[in-house]
Image (cartoon, rainbow, N blue to C red):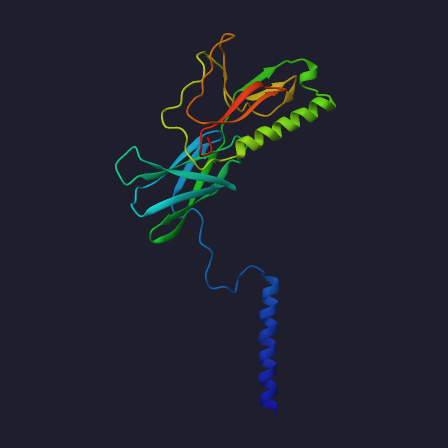
Length: 243
C-alpha cells in the first residue's frame, strides 16, 4: 500500500507541475513543431507610394497565384509577353500610410501537384516627400456641418471604388498620360493648408487649358463618376487587378 501511495503521489506531482508550467508559459511551449519562420523565401523592398512588381518564375504546372500583404489581397496574372509557359506577375501597392519596416508578403501557388505557400519579407522604406503650403478660403478648410457630412460620404464612396479589385486584367498596352501639360502637383506631397497639416496628395496634378481633351490612360471599366466637394468632377476607371 505504501508503494502504491508513493506512485499516486508522484503522478499527482507530475501533473501539477505540468499544469503550473502551462499557466506560467501559456505559449505553445509543449508543442514539438515550431511555427514556420517568416520571410524564408526572399525579400522585396519598396518606398511608400510605390508599386513593387513580384514575379513568380514560369512553370507549366502553375494554374493560379494569389498574394496577401498587410491584409490586402494581391491578384496575380499570367504574363504572356515572353515565351511559354508564362510567368505570373503581381503588383503590390505600397500605400503612403503603410508603416516603414518589414512586413510579410504571402504567396499561395496552386499547381497540378497541389498547393504551395511562400513567405517573403517586404521592406517598406519611408519616403521623404516635399511639402506644399496653401492658403484657401476659410470655408474650404473649416467645414460647416453639412459640408463635413458631404465630404465624409464622398470619401466613403471613393474608398469603396478603390477597394474593389477586379480579378480580370483590362489593360493591354502601356499607360498614357491623360492630358498634355506640365506636372504641377506631385503624388504624395504633404499639404499644409491654412497652417493645418492635411493628408498627402493622392493624385498628380497636370496643368491643361480649359476645354482640353482628357483621355483614359488605358482600357478599363468606369466604376464611378462624381462631382465632389474638393476634387470636383471626376471619372474613376477600373483597369483591373487593383489598378
